[in-house]
Length: 579
Image 1 (cartoon, one colour):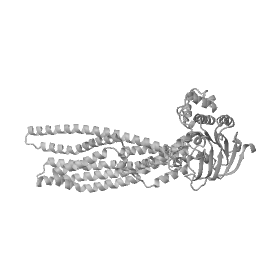
Image 2 (cartoon, rainbow, N blue to C red):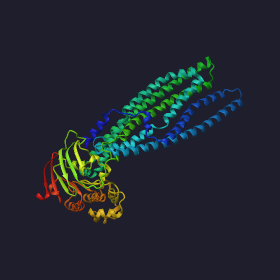
Image 3 (tube, rainbow, N blue to C red):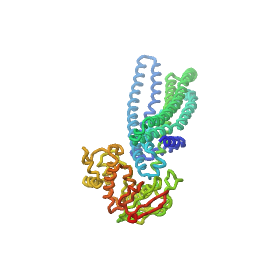
C-alpha cells in the first residue's frame, strides 16, 4: 500500500500542469446558462462601476462644504445625499442580478460537468482504471475540481474589471494630470500581481494531488477495514493519511504565503501612492486651479481602480486553478474508450447458443504490457457444456474470464461467441447474456433485494424470491428480521462469505444468462458454505455454457472437460469421461 501510494503521488506530482483556454471552461454551458451569465455579468459591470461613481459624489460633498452661505451648503449637500440613495438602489439591483444569476449559472454548469464526468468514467474500459484512474482520484475530481471550475466562473473578476476601468475613466475625465502622476505606481502593482499569479500556478495542482492520495488511502482502509484491524494496521493507515494531509497542508501554506505576498505588495504600493497624490494635488490646487473636490474625486477614483486590480488577484488565481481542473475533467469526459459501453452498434444474434471459442490469443494487461499473460492460448467450449480451467496463480485462468466478458481485447487472436468475433457483437447485448460470479462478490451498500435486482431491473418480487431459492439464499434471508429489505453493509460486510456468494449467484440467476462464468466462486468459503454454494451452482449450470476457473483440481465438480493452464498456455485437456 505504501509503494503504490507513493508511486502514485510522485507520478502525479511530477506531471506538468495543463490548462484549457479560458472560454473552453464554458464548453458545457447551455443557453440558459449563457443567459444567466450574461445578465449576471451586466449586473457585475453595473455593480463594479458604482464603486468609482461614489468618488464623484465624495468630490461633490467636499465642494459643497465650500459654499458661501449655510443655506447654500445645506441645499448642495442634500442634493448629493439624494444621489447617494439613488446610487445605492441601483447598486442593490445590480448586486442582486450579479450574485443570483452567476450562482445559478455556476451551480447548473458544475452539476452538468459532474454528471458528464461520472457518465464518462462509467463508460470507460477496465484498462482505464488499471492505468489512469483510482477511486480516490475520481471522487476528488468530482468534488474538488468541479468546485474549482465553479469558483473560476464567478462574477468577481467582471466586477473588479469594471471597477478598474470605471475608476480610471472617471479619474482621467476629472483630472488627468493628477491621474498620470498616480499611475506611476501601476506598473509596480502589475508586476506584483503577475509574479504571485505565476507562483500560484506552479503550486495549484499539488494540493489536489495530495488530497486525492489521501482519499485513496481512506477508500483502501475503510474498504478493507477487517484486514486492517486484524493486522493492527490502524496506526500505519493513519500515518499514511497524515503524510498526505501534511503535504496538502504545506502546499496550502505555500499558496497562502504567495497570495499574501501578492496582496500585501499591491496594497503597500497603493497606500504609498497616497502621499504622492496629496502632495501633487496641493501643487495642482495652487498652479492649475483644481478644487478640493476634484482632488478627492481623482484620488478615490484611482484608488478604487487600483484596489479593484488588487482584489482581482484571487479571482485570477481561481481562474488559473479552474483552467487546470477543467483540463483534468474534460480530458476524461471526452475520452473515447477502446471498448465503449455506450456504443450501440454491433451484431445482435437472434438465438444465442453459447458456443465459446478462443483462437490463438496473446494478451498482456495494460498496466504490465511487457508481461505476456496468455501466449497463443486456444480452447473451445461447446454450447450447454461445462469446462473447468485450472492452474496455479498467475497462469492466466481469470484472464480468460475477462476476455469472454470483454473487459479487455486481446493484442492478437480472437474470442468468438457462436462463431462471431466478440468485437463485432453489440457490447451491451452480449454482456446481458453473460453471468459472472467471482471469488469475492461485489455487493452494494443497500438491501438484499436491491443487490439481487441489479441483475434485472424490472424483475418482480416473485422472480427475486425464485432466484434466491435456486441460489440457496432464501433459507437465510427468510430468517432475517427485515427479510429481503435487510441492508448488507459496505461491500456486504454484514453477511458471511457464503451468504454474500449466494446473493451474487441469485443476481446472476435473475439475469438468466446463456453463458455462466465462475471465477473461483467457492475457493474462499469454508466446507459447509462451499457445499451449499456448490449445490446452487449445480442447479444454475444446467442448459448453460459454463466456464469455471479453479485454483485447485479438488474444487471442480460436475464438468465435461478440464483444461490445465500453465504460463498462459494449455498444457493438458481432459474429457471428464477419461479422467
